[in-house]
Every structure is written in structure tokens, then in C-alpha cells.
Amino acid sequence: MLLRIVNQENSLFPILKEDLQLKALSHKEQKLIKILDFAEIEKNLTVVSITNTPKDREEIARAFIAKSVYNIQTTRDLIDRLKNDRTLRILCGWRYKSNIPSESKFSRVFKELSVLQIAAKTHERFVKEYLEHTIFFYNATDATKIPLRVKPVKAKKEPIPKNKRGRPKKGETPFSKKPTILQQQRTMTTTKEMLSLVSTKCGVGVKQNSKGNREVWIGGKLHISAVDGDIPITAFYSGANIHDSSVALPLMNETSQRVSYLYDLQDAGYDSNNIRDFSKKLNHRPLIDINPKNSTELKEKIELKLEEQKKLKC
Image (cartoon, rainbow, N blue to C red; front, side, top):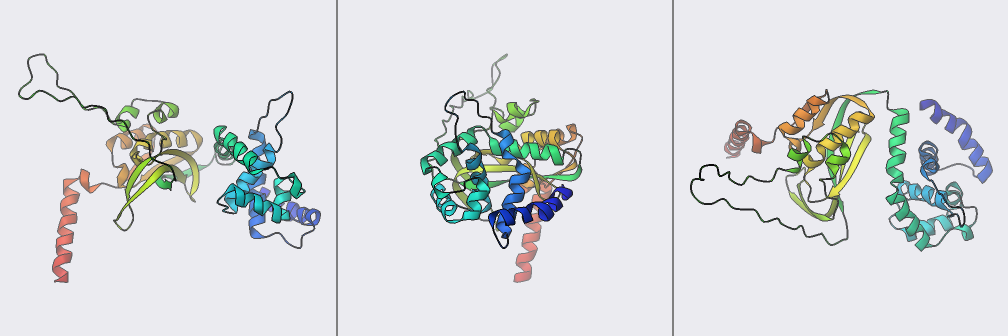
């Protein structure tokens, strides 16, 4: 990988400067060129059509990456940037302003790329090509909020059958609670099967931030598994109302298939014996923070420490 980067900087960049008639490539332009060269997104674009072959698919796919690199918020802003920035336009594949498609076509192709999961396939191929034979020290799992300007889907509450008062009759079994997503995933073997229980519909999420304050948002969550050097290996999307631990097993299972690592690092939100057992089953060592809610001993220690701090302040 390092040799490829060196070749880019020594051979590719000077050629591009000469062809584009530029004095120098900016940092963002160099970054985009490296990403486009490594991603080779064209390999995942398969267009099968005898007549009326779709146009501009590869160019729009490159623009899709440029939108992320340049942190451009809307498609309209991206088109304006392409029209005014000659270098970016040529890097994406259009020589003239008149060649740039309409906003509606951009949106339509972006939707197609999303359905085809082009970004996910490109990332998966990159991991397999460059990281498959590397042994990493740890795999850290966490989730981040994704706010959306969409109305949350109202979840249908299933009626919970109530047990009759008093002692149950002989041979009568009391109603048991429905097992959680994590409990159901425990017996599953494939990532696809585990994710079938995880909703991707827009929901309302509540999370405690690093300062201890509650944050409420409407949208979803991105659950990520990253190895040494903050390299993301696996990522799954869910509704905001899904608990972080519900996506822990599919993340660990999929990451284990892509790369080799030793430890599973997770915060107190993942404190569950189901997760620990699954990590050991994959021949890993789980390092998970203990949640005070699940440990009376730790809860007592925290309360004692708070009391001592109050006394010192007085």
C-alpha cells in the first residue's frame, strides 16, 4: 500500500499537473485522487443494457466520493462546485460544464448507488485486498448518532399478556417476556440473520453524552467496528431507537470474517454476558466496561466516592 502511495506522489501527480495545466494540486485534490485510485469504484458499477446504455454512472460515482471529501452538503452545491472548479470537474470525468448532468439525474443515480451499496462493496473490497492478512491488536465497537429531517416511524406496541393473580394452577405455565434482540441473536450464525432483527426505520434516540447529559435526536445510528489506527472495518446502520448492544454481535461476527484481531473493546453500554460469551466463541478476549446498573458492588463504590467528594467540598 505504501509503495502505491509513493508511486502516486512521484508519478501520477506530476502527470496530472501537466495534463490539467496546473501549477500545483491542492491538499484536497491530492486526497481525492488517492481515494479514487484506491477505491476503483468503477469495478463495482455493473451496467447491463443492450440498448439505451445509462450514461455518466462512473462520473457521478466519482462525484459522490468528491461530495464527501469536500464536505459538500447538497447535490445543488456539488453541481455548482463542479461547474466552477475545472480541476474537480475533470477529476470526476467531465471536461466541459455542458457535460454535467441535471440535479434530478444526480439524485436518481445517487439513489441507485445507495440501493446497490456501492460504497459498502468498495470498502469491503479495500479491506479484503489490503488488510485481510494483517493481525490487529483490538477491535473497538461504538455507535454515533445520525440526525435526519424525517418524521419518526411510530413503533407498534405488542400487547403484553398479563398473568392471572395468585398461584398458577398445576400444569399451567406463566407468560414469559419476549426475549431481547441480543438474546435472539445468540443462537444465530450468520450476520444477515442477526441484522434481520434490527430495524433501520427512522426513530427517536436517547443517549448520554460524555458530560453526562441526555441527548435526544430523530434519525438513526451508525454502528462501527474499528481496529488499530482507527481503521473502520465494518459499519451497520440502524434506527435511533435501537440499543447499541443489539448490533454488537453482527459487528463482531462480520469483522472477524474480514480481519484477524485479539481483543474486543467496548464501553459500558455493551455490558452483557451474551456479548462476552460470543467474543470468546470467536477466540477473542472481551474487554468491556462494567455498567454500574449491573453491578451492586461498583454502584456502592461510586456512591461512596460521591459522598467523600461532598464531604471534602464542605
